[in-house]
Length: 278
Image (tube, rainbow, N blue to C red; front, side, top):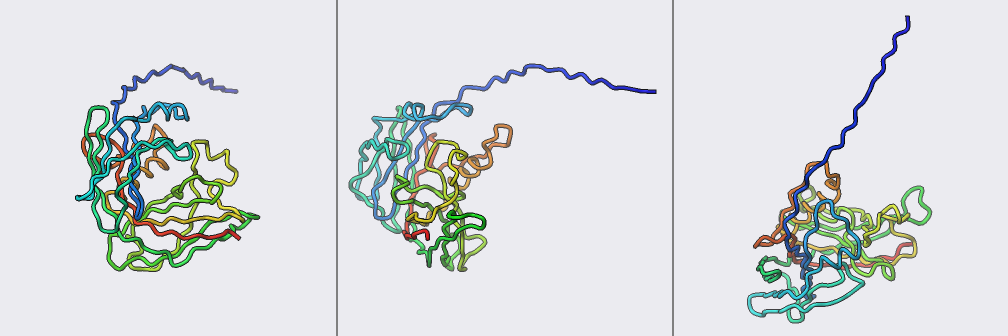
């Protein structure tokens, strides 16, 4: 006897009514040690919205009032157009440069609303050494490595950037750029730097994505940051690297901006070192 089973499947179109996102201001601002403040202002984008260069230009907020103060000097930031930067328009200070230990207050007046935030610049933690090492099974590609000694006091927070001279127009956060000293407090610690992308293009279009190459001159920017600044980037990177799937549980990104805006205002205690990949 031969018994056969035939299975039929039904297909049904499912329509999801996605609510329109409330328009909000997105602040991405920073003040580096020995440098002026920079603040970019954009509108938020719907979850399923597309991102390209023309869309970014439409999201930029011009004509805002942006003020940074250290409690004594008030610096009204000026609009700057810079097509080597991302986003290509931002507000830049001219009076206040970042100093270790100082508190910097930000006020943004945009789209009829006022937003405020506060940050500090911790003392930078120097890198003991920086070197390049070719990865196994790679002819000329590898990672930059560094070693540093974490201070004895707990509660230190870090973010690391790299920049390849003549290739990267600005510093780029390494992949997994954020960390605290929970697991290496007071110890000597070594870590590798996986090169991040400075482009909106898919990483699959860059066969060297993640790597540095023999011949590159690489500047490492290792930054100490305060806890609120760290918390924003920890939650933001969690969403970027783990939450891009719309069917996964979304991450609650923790902003330090008051008044209903999204984003971050953060100080960087920066230490720089340079290595030639060879």
